[in-house]
Image 1 (cartoon, rainbow, N blue to C red):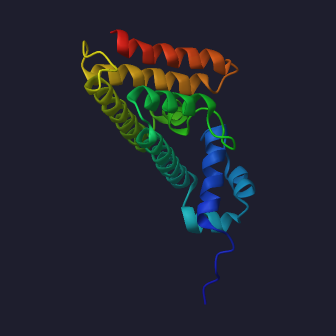
Image 2: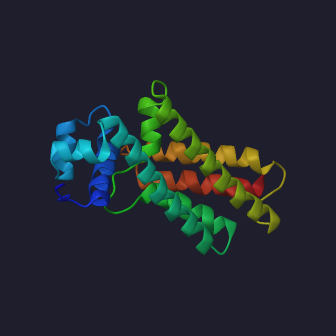
Length: 193
């Protein structure tokens, strides 16, 4: 008879995701994961596979959580400007119990050049983020909030680059006020272009 699991799989995956997010892939050992997740090594391998497979699952979990959060923020927004402000505020302030920065951006910087699976996941997420920015920009152009002097694709590419840069900067000691000013200027440029 098979022994029942003594842990909640989603809780353990959440803990692994946060550890990878905070420390990065290379710095996180299997011993770190076992201790942080509060499960036995054999249970980790049986449930999640090897470290790389667990990391990819953690990336998927991060993507699902962040996408759900950001899309929800956009849907609750009354204006395109408000939607962008909420997205940038989320990037700058993060969530209370989460590491700073972004697991996907950190992973792209650390691994994408030498790990095809990480490159695919980060590139796909970046494309989805750009599409979200494009949709918001089109909304703002349609409502007259944003200028139509440049096409929405180019503006979305620019905003995404700012977004990724802010995600990186959020992991440093740079003050949040400076990051907020960068976001504010980026949003203002949409209406003055």
